[in-house]
Amino acid sequence: MATGWYLIVGLLLILIGLTDTWRRELPVSAAALYLIAGHLLGPEVAGFIDLSLDRDAALLEHLTESAVLISLFAVGLKLRAPLRDRIWRAPVLMATLTMLATVALLCAGGLALGLALGPALLMAAALAPTDPVLASDVQVDHERDRDRLRFSLTAEGGLNDGTAAPMVLLALGLMGLHELGPGLSRWALVDVLWGAAGGLALGWTLGFAVSRAVVWLRREREQALGMESFLTLGLIALTYGLALLIQVFGFLAVFAAGLAMRQVERHDTPGHVGTQLRPDAQAHPEQASAYMAKAVLDFTLDLEKLAELVVMIVVGTLLTREAFTAQTVVVALAALLIARPLAVFLTVPGRAFNPSQRRLAAWFGIRGVGSMYYLAFAVSHGARGVQMGWVADAVLVTITLSVLLHGSSATPVMKFYRRARRRGA
Image (cartoon, rainbow, N blue to C red):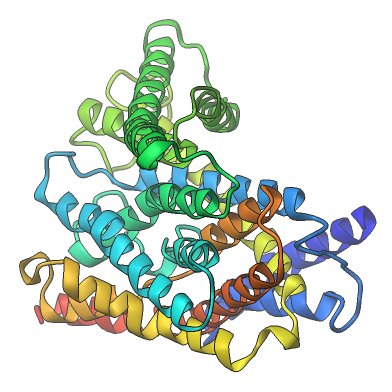
């Protein structure tokens, strides 16, 4: 198994590196190509990779967990708008009310198809968050990007992988696999209030403190130079580890840590973003923060591409022909074509977007790594049985259709959108 992974990942990385410019002209995304490669290498075709959700749930949980953490940190670093800016209102609504509406709609669909409440809610909660890893084509172009649609889709993907966690835990509680407390009291106080507020506070504090310490060392002592990779991995690991220790939502904490680092840069260098950095920018009083934020983001984005490759190969390997039943395809199409658009139109006020932006926000509810993580998390924590097998198939089919449909439409649609915006439409 290990030998096979080394060979596969190494070969794919080289091929993607050599053909990246050509690949960008194709009507499919890199994620779709990885997913297809994983299926061809899996037990359904070549049998070169043999993974099972039941047998390898813990491994799959940790792989997808790492991918989500890397991407959430990168998303936080991309968002430079002040936290009091009105541009944050739409993504916060989308990461909370829109997500809850999506959960309600998909849970109702699961119940109508014969699932018990626990599995139906688990399926809905796993499919509710949009994906921060696979949505690069619809995210902000750069840290100064003020486009409401791109900013909202980016920030939503950073927030809702964390805000979906209470619903997953509620589903596991209904299945007898998580303590909810009398009248859901423990779930409401610990899993919702403490988990969300504590996660955001922890991540912000650590991201702010570490960023300030590094900038001070560079400016005043000319130390901690050229260690952006260590800083990135260390801050992600420290934040997530402490979040697990104090039982808050680590996904929100890591997102907040990246956001805090960018806000430190915004405060320190308001006039230097997007300008040419000086040769001594690492330690220069006016550009140390900007250099740090740029170097950390560049390193994180490279890690994100590797994580995308690995997870999409995993999804392709797990996917079987038997998973594509009438019911699972109905769930997938309902999630992408009904639940997401309806939830956006019900919960996001018209003044947040113009009509074209609202339609695109309703369409680009990309499902991917976050959904795969929550599925693996649930199985590794004891969610088994016939209905869970059906839920797993529905989640995998939805991810596959989302990668194919959204991946093929993202580049041309967003190119058209950018041209229309430049024309003032």
